[in-house]
Length: 444
Image 1 (cartoon, helix red, strand yellow):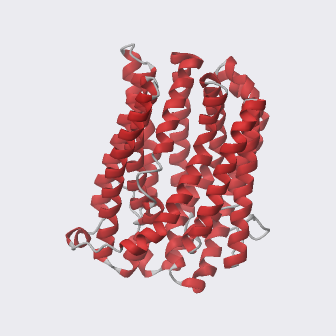
Image 2 (tube, rainbow, N blue to C red; image 1 turned 90 degrees about the horizontal axis):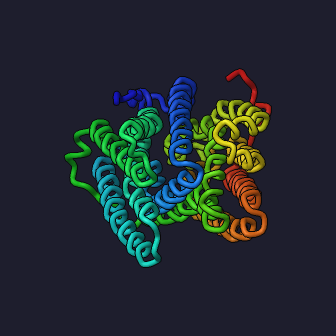
Image 3 (cartoon, one colour; image 1 turned 45 degrees about the vertical axis):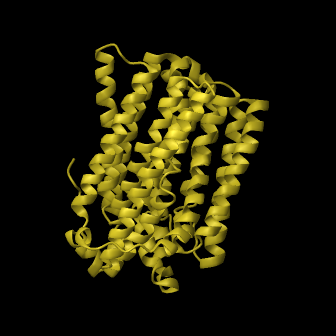
């Protein structure tokens, strides 16, 4: 995998210029995200055809447990890397740069092994089947890959980090699935093994990339550990990250627990299709987040730069998101029927989730603004409260109304936290994280 170079010298010498030149990089990241999503979508259809609706539901249920547990090991250093590494790069503080990298990797690896071991022991004591136990082990490799991507992203190589993840992981999965299909060995267990190997490969490639882009004098320096400051910030970011994970992942688990694993597969396909509408938004956020963190170091003097970044991010991402929402709602039934007749019942769920994700695009990078500019405690509270609401009301909605009940709760929660973050950004920093006539015009 080749490295897409980001001009670090330009970033240092002309920060305002580099911060505002999002277009070409956004197109590259967006293209990689589109390609990766297309590959993943094809793989989902292959799995459904080969495993059947019930087998696919079991696969999704196990994988979602791994993705949820993957948010625990790093203890907030994923978002912390995006926050601290740009600061140390700008200040050329090599010892602390080295220290935060070592601390993050050590904690994530150690905690990941511990969490997987505990989850497997609990699963065995509860009589969980082997697919769920294998799903737990995904937590270690997914958390490592996420942390390493954040470290690369924080080093201003955000295009490389995104291209590697968006293309490397699904291509590796595709190659593994093709081999299993050729030898007639594609089962729920072997498919989960392929997912594990694909994430492990991505983590190793990201580690190689991080080693390549980290200056040699940083690696040679004696690390300095600012544990007090890091723990204060990353602790709050960890709670926020946990809340985000619960919001993004637990609805599929709720369906699997309350309604059934077959329905969990149907719901998961709807979430995968709806998530396409977030590609543009996620691509732009991956570009602006380290730059927002860098501008935030200037205090209120950096707010005008942050506002320009917000405007630019919304301008780039809003139109593709709206266009996809219109298309997805209009074609929901034929698309789901093409995947499988059993999935056509998820039409209303898909429509709700598309509208839910549209609220993310409309609010722009509000989460990064609140968490990186200095209100990580408020950010954590908002995300945790909404996560608790999703679990409580999602369980109730699923028990009473099935798939549609969970989807309604998920949509309401998405709108709720986006509205809350907009209010905090506006009230505390005077930053506007919504479209306006200024931000949505076609001309930059």
